[in-house]
Image 1 (cartoon, rainbow, N blue to C red):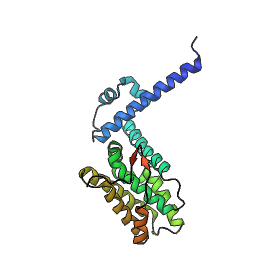
Image 2: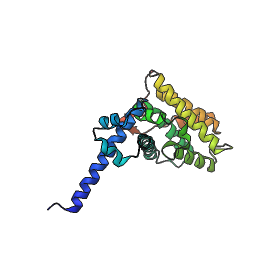
Image 3: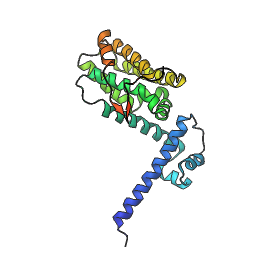
Image 4: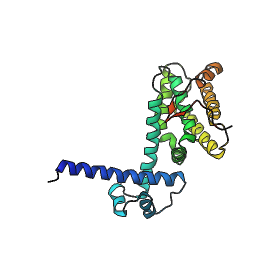
Length: 220
């Protein structure tokens, strides 16, 4: 006799695999800028049945929303893991932005999914926006950053994030590390840090991701 608990575990794992396959397929379409695709094409790309789609999502729009939210949160969780170990909120902010800029080349598909969010990135409950808001607030509370309006400060960071990502995709030969650090310095100075301090924070070593040393310069 098959144990009921074992059967339920098997069903849960199968449902999780199906949902993950659909989200992965949706993220691939988002990265390609293809959202006007029929559900059938999505299920074919995910290698699941049409009926399985509606067991998980009410519509294609719900799937794409989940795909973006999960990509944003995956990025955010990665930043949380890679920005630990510092008591200086200005350093945490700088490290987070510097890592994000480099991830556009290391994980281009994830980057394009995030770019698909466009201006809505600033108001998302997932990923970059809530963490940037947290870090900006912490740096201001510690007297490291100065700004009059946190929402405007977040808008500035979001604009720089999206603009840098698009630039690096449009100019694959540009040095991503140098471009990212220059923009990070500019942001730090805008938020009140002296030029020397901004340069120092942008010269600190960064952790590796999957064996890729983030401090290594990209293409010239």
